[in-house]
Amino acid sequence: MANASRQPTASAVARRGKIGRPEGAGSNVRETILDAAEVTFADLGYAGTTLREVSQKAQVTQALISYYFGSKYGLFEQVFLRRGRKISDDRLENLATLRRDGNKPSVRDIVLAFLTPTLALRATPEGRAFIRLQARLHTEPPEISYRLRNEAYDASTRAYVEAFCEALPHLPAKDVYWRVTLMVGAYMYAFSDTHRLEELARGICHPEDPDEVLAQITSFLSGGIAAAATEADT
Image (cartoon, rainbow, N blue to C red; front, side):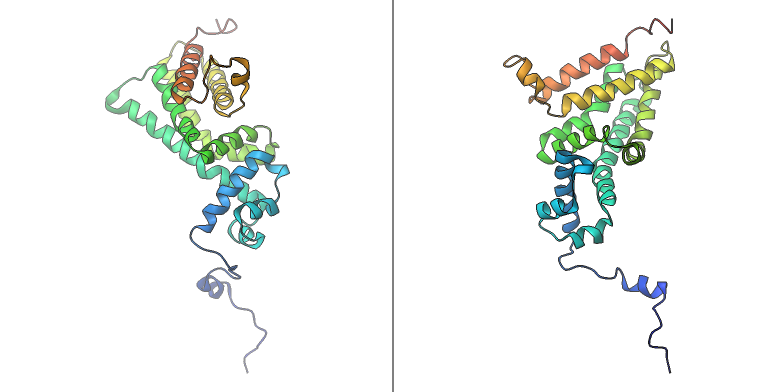
């Protein structure tokens, strides 16, 4: 007689697919959860967000969130990498376009290629939420932030350091690394809807105008990146 208590093999389980598929799982549910979590994490930060809040915003059960993402960190990881990888890929594609046919891009061209993928996110509420989330990532604990930031952006950021070194061969690599890091901080602040500029220069500056934002930050960054080497280097 067969042993009725014998457990199924791993291969048998794999053939059946996931066990315990919760009611409500479907093709659009995963994206709905990611969208809701993106806004919640952006507003409350990682520590301040609970899966219960995400489930209420997405109008799904916590079981569905666990089914798709496993844990709060798993959810946070997928929220961040969903757009972070896209930004990085778009930056690399922009850089490749600039270099096509052996062209040597200017500093301003490189700055624009770096900025435009993130600036495009400001056109939608979801994109703005991600920009706030990305800015928050720098204040999250290292065990949460470092790996995600490196996984999303390391390759593309290093490619831009190389591009600036090629455009500015007289600059020491140390200066270029510093300036690229400062560029990241400047664009995050400029794009993250702090509303400081509206208060400080009401009626003069218009940070809701994407053309004005891009023109100002590109001019600022291009001048800073192309400035003479620091006194310590010279």
